Amino acid sequence: MKPRAYVETWGCQMNLHQSEGLSGILEAAGYALVDHLEEADVVVFNGCMVRQKAEEKVFGRIGAVVELKRSRSVLLGVGGCLGQIHGADLLKRFASIDFVFGSSGHSDLPGLIEEARTQRVAVLSEPVFDTVNRFKRSGTISGMVTITEGCSNFCTYCIVPYARGPMRSRPEDLILSEVMRLREQGYREVLLLGQNVNAYGTDLEKAVTFPELLSAVADTGIERVRFTTSHPKDMSETVFRVMAKRENVCRHLHLACQSGSDAILKAMNRSYDRRHYMDIVKSGRKWVPDLNITTDIIVGFPGETDGDFERTMTLLEEARFGSVFAAKYSPRPNTRGAELPDDVPQATKEERLERILQRQREIALEENGRFVGNELAVLIEGRTKRGELFGRGDDHRTVICPGDAEMGEFVTVRIAGASASSLSGGILERECVGGMT
Ligand code: SF4
Image (cartoon, rainbow, N blue to C red; front, side):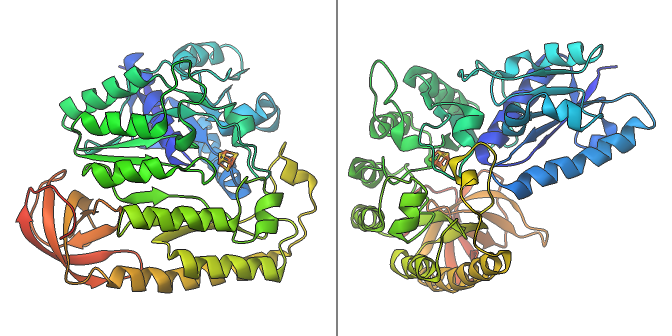
């Protein structure tokens, strides 16, 4: 019987995609992948530590493996950003962890597991581009494709440059061949991934810019092309021109703002100010009408005054985001932010977070309401718990539509209702490709 492996992922889409690589490597090495921790002989946690809460959640899951180890032999490995930052300390802190791995170089995972059968081991990664070419993908409709790894920006609050190393761009030919492969396998969408996709190519010998790469990916004929994440300092108008020209480049931009206050942006080392951010928003909407812009916001960064926070609130009004991922600041080890006094009281952070989320819900409801009566091309991704179909418009809005269609099929939906988080309506036509009319 094949040994059974279970991979659990915490964190961002980069981590999710890396877990697809981990699963592919384990499967190729003869492991049977299982869906439940309780069934596994080897448990792998691919962990995040961008926020303290994420880190605590992974540590909280270790207890389930300890329980399992009481009745039989199980190996536990912890890796990703969490493994890279804590390294061998994890072995000292948790007697139940058998092996630790880093944020890249996963090809060695089966060997590491074998080593861990005789002695506990921690192997961290050099910042290389992993050579994984066999992914066990979690879906069959949208495929993630890494275009850059690591980040060289050193925002003061962020651990990513320490966990993942400097930004490395993946050669264009490898990206294009992976997109072509996905297309041949029936995928209808690709999501180009990187911590800062707009800086793509700046480290390559044969310089290829992100807009050039985006055009080349669009040329492969894959039906939808998405990308994330964009950094305002590297975002250029040329990207919007490509979006405007290419029907298959989706009208969605995730552009992290983090704060509406210039003083806080400076303290965060974000390299742009509010005016620059809003210039990008306006330029995007000039080139791509109905561009859905989503963002990340941190509340309670050290030194954030009531006035700074109110500037973030007014940015919400000006930018009219489709959705916002907001979080309370928590200091991360090794970062420059950790040297600053974490001086915004917890209760103030919570109150500010709630105000952001509340106002954003209202804005999202107003923005979504504008779509009622329109027709939208929706790529069907699954069914809700209530059995209705759901999918996404090309601007990344979730659309719920009762009726019949295949997973991965394009349908035209007439929008009849809107909430803060989704649109809903009936299917007018099946299998069509195009934008909103
Ligand atoms: S751009 Fe800043 S926030 Fe984003 S990954 Fe890099 S250092 Fe972190």
